[in-house]
Structures are given as C-alpha cells and as structure tokens.
View 1: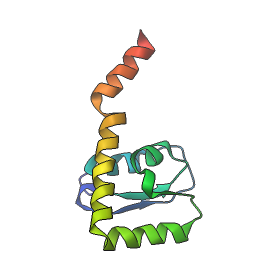
View 2: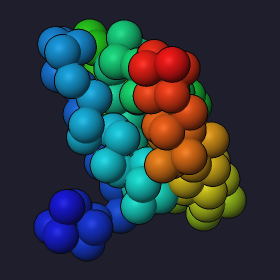
View 3: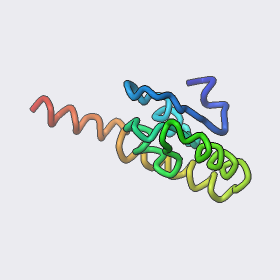
Length: 102
C-alpha cells in the first residue's frame, strides 16, 4: 500500500478474476486503474477504465487519455474514491456483516 500510494496511474490486465484487491486499493487512493472488466472491484470502482482483458488497444487509448487529458484523469480519480466509499467503506462492510449474521 505504501508503494502503491506513490503512483499516479495503475494498470492490471490479469485474466484471472479471483481477487480484486489491486483495483480496490487503487480506488482507495484515487489512482485511476485500467483493468479487467470481469473483476468486480475494477468494474465497480473504475467503470470508465474497465476493458476486456485482451483489448490492449482500448487500454492503451485510455492510458493515453489519462496522461494527456487532465479533466478525464481528475474525473476518474474522484469517481474511484467516491465509488470506493459508496461500496466498500467500513459502514457498508458493517451493514453487510450485520445482514449476514443477524
């Protein structure tokens, strides 16, 4: 997390969908993450940056846009933080746990 927090962009095009902690952690810091659309945390926290894992051309175009379009970068960063808070903050987790346990 310490190292990740120093980056401005993230790319995670792994074909496996077992875990989504990289895109989740990126969203926590507001780091736009281009990633596999099949990963829940990617799709939820970075919807505008989610691509098919083999669509390298789209990922490349998004990376170029993030680097060169400050407004797009800021929007993606802001949205990822908001979506993280909406879906994954501690209060949401507590509510889900209460629903499971009660």
